Amino acid sequence: MKIEHIAIWVDDLEKMRQFYRTYFNVSCGEKYVNPKKQYASYFLSFGPGQSRIELMHRPDIGENTGKRGFTKGLAHLSLSLGSKEAVNQLTERLRKADYTIASKPRTTGDGYYESAVLDPEGNYIELLA
Image (tube, rainbow, N blue to C red; front, side, top):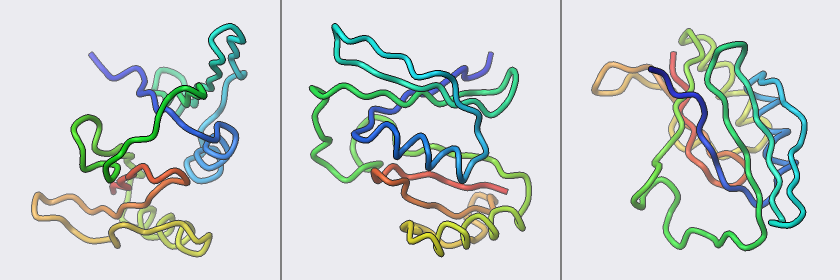
């Protein structure tokens, strides 16, 4: 088994798609639109046979009232970059682009080398070596 995809409700579908394409080198499928349900989505792929992210938008989906990642449900998305150097470089690139760095690069108590950034809509993204 493997995780095929994870889905994220978003307010700004195009802004979120561009963020993940720019910083995580994903490919993007065609936009799917269902006018009857006022639903639109994109699938973002990390490569053939790899996990995907589905970005979804519908105007009637309400805002989470708690701090993202600290309410029941999905807490964070963790992406493996392959090396400490890659974590450091992407963290710095995101910082220079004025994204919120939620956690600077470090080795955690459970042995991971990671940092964390908030995407444009506040989702907590861990960057792992």
